[in-house]
Amino acid sequence: MALRISNTPRRYCARIARSRLARNLEHSTDRRNGFRALSTNEATTDSTQQASQVESIRLTQEGDKLKVEYLVSLAQNSRVWLPSTCVSEDLKRNYASGWWTACRDGDVQALQQYMDCCAETMIHTRDSKDRSPLHFLAGRGDTEVICSLLDVGADVNSQDADGYTPLHLAAGYMQLESLQSLLDAGADADIEDGTGRSPQSLVRTLLNSTPVTTTMYSRRIALESMLRAIEDHIYEEVVPARIVNKRNSNGYDEYLVEWLDDFEETWIPEVEIADDIIFDYENDIERVVGTVVHDDSKDPKSRQLIEWKDTPLLSWR
Image (cartoon, rainbow, N blue to C red; front, top):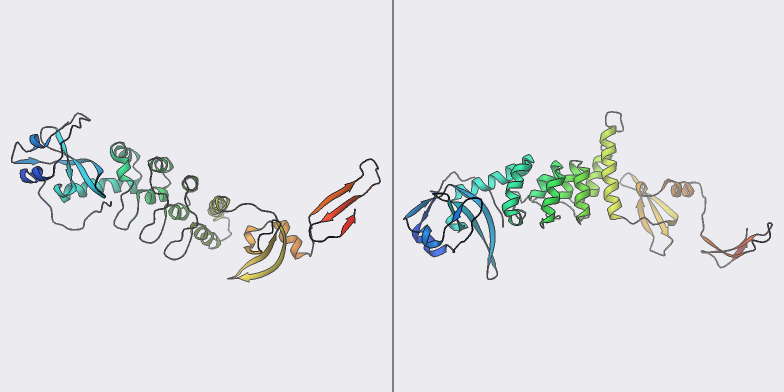
């Protein structure tokens, strides 16, 4: 379900015809917030009812189809649930506009009013560019509201028309706390946007394009923190056996790493390898894993017999 703000200037009369009510209205017993909900018979006692505004929205299931219904305020402090087809476009447009304005402005109070009455429905809304509420809030850094939306089932990996996820927006606008909340909620950091960039590559690109100057120091620190948060989420820290080769890829050094757990050799960017491992490779220092198979601790002059991982030969040390 998508709520879209129409650009059409035409306005529809905010009236409910008796014949339409007779065909579409369901009986309602809702009595909340001082309003009295009308039944179908009550709503059709007059030939028309003046609708003033939309109060809430919900999704109902009819067979295998989902339908949108609006809770509309009528005359004499009464209200009734109506199918979307029975509600004027200007009322629906005003309701949607208020929601998206609150999302863009980070208006917590207004957002909370929508959340209190119809959170499970509003989390599924999309604007004209297919952006979800999470996209706006992630870019703004409204972590508290983000967590509230996630708690009621918002899609943490929803993509807009450009392929951006909320994680892309949090990363691009350097909202570390929001980014961490999205990662904790299961955001997929490998999803690529329309240009093939993941949130990780987006942050790395921003970091590489930020000059190493005193004026840009705080920006670089923020980007490095975001990159570290994403990488900590993606990668498992594993101790490599050694570096076996080096190459330059698109202006950046990469190293071919051999792993201790017999995993296949992998090309890894320089920034993801510990400095001491690179130092050993550059200076031809070989580090080999060994196991002590004999150690006479009673003799202070004794040596240890070592069995090495990469050779069947034993040696003393």
